[in-house]
Length: 484
Image (cartoon, rainbow, N blue to C red; front, side):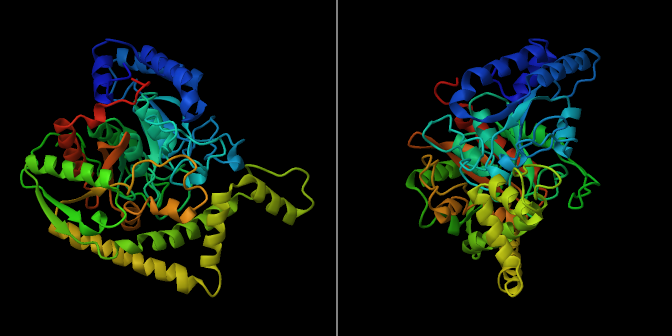
């Protein structure tokens, strides 16, 4: 059963080939058998999952089932889940039991999906390798010595290893697309505001966006239809009708204008990644797409702009973790100042502290105009570049990351090199655009992802292009050895 896509599982449930309880038990058994090698889950909610599966079976028996009813999934441990530990991969929230559900959790539970557990992640979503988690690093199913990507590495690894057919993630600078690419699965970062951030623990509020992981673009379309929609509790949620993302799946790509940003194919791009992307371009050309070179002249500024804006917003958002109201509290504080200092010093990891310090500096008196305000001005220039390019073509295409997954520990002592692994994804978040990562081959034995970038709220087109590519290739169907 674990080799089936969500669409296949849904059809099997509808045909009574198996029950949701049988399906859920199968995935729980796989988690017990395999996750010791991966560390992709922080919490497994077995009792809750079995109860939800039985409720889904009863719902189906009453004729009330939808396409996702009874299908298991996992949530990144950044989404508040009522009655379940929500740690954000941090010691700071190791003892936090969420008292309510995030909007995404509500929507997917309402669709009848069955929660298997909460997945491992970089602490407070700050990282590109899933090595900053308080609960230890996640291992890539394709190579246990490799990182799975981050910050949503646990979700990507769990889907790749067939421990769950679906998972949620968040993408602040590439944290869905990059791990999807490095683990050989499909991942979608929707348009900013398309999916509510209510109950999604904040990192950088103007950049964070929730989205799905799955095996195929078709599965992502089913998941996004359930996740998307206006939420009055989130002031950045867009009040816009949610289309049927499956409606145009399979439409011809004849005449589709695909732009290749020349800045994404220069120095620093691994030869194996380049070869896989070039081959993917030829697949789309054979499907009828026309290929044009375009330019994003300010894309080289995305890394410095992001690493001013994101830490500044993180500094503000993480100020709430002070040892007073909830979360970690130091032992025997000697006054209020000691409580603040030791609770934050002991509760946060090194990468989180680094970003808080950078962000606080950028927002401080005398530096706000020089750094934060200037970064916001350049952010507008980056957005305008995308507007210009997407006025000339329908979608943009390029690599997700400059290299395949690197080895665990390889970049932990060099934060700048770590940050550069997101060089092709950061600008999409700065502009608020949707981005899709789909499997496109291998560089050596490690997966390569293809990134498709669309205009605002053009997820349906991106998903159709991804679907047509996957109909012509089998990269998304391949499983890592030992997890077949």
